[in-house]
Length: 99
Image 1 (cartoon, one colour):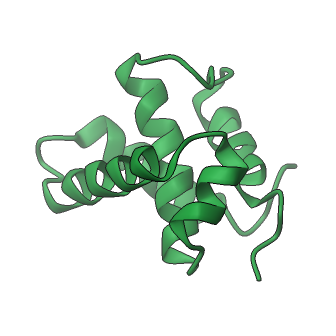
Image 2 (cartoon, rainbow, N blue to C red):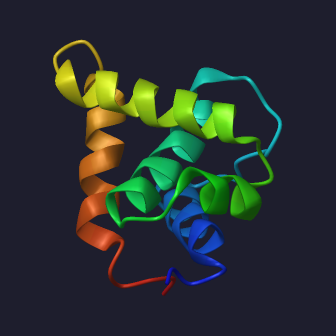
């Protein structure tokens, strides 16, 4: 069972790494990618799409799109260097929570 607040924990870590708040409805690419990182990590943690959707306030198709987009970014690291830098920082810090 996933922590019922895991998405928000991951989002706070990403926000801290970015140095800014991530709006939940913004379509600005950097904010979409930040939210997608949290969703993708939950997916890697074994959380189902419906649970992820419930936690982040999206529908299951939005979750599927975020997972798919993050997978594409990870498959093409040379095209998405800034996103990869943030992803690596997130991976290094996700286990420490919010400091």
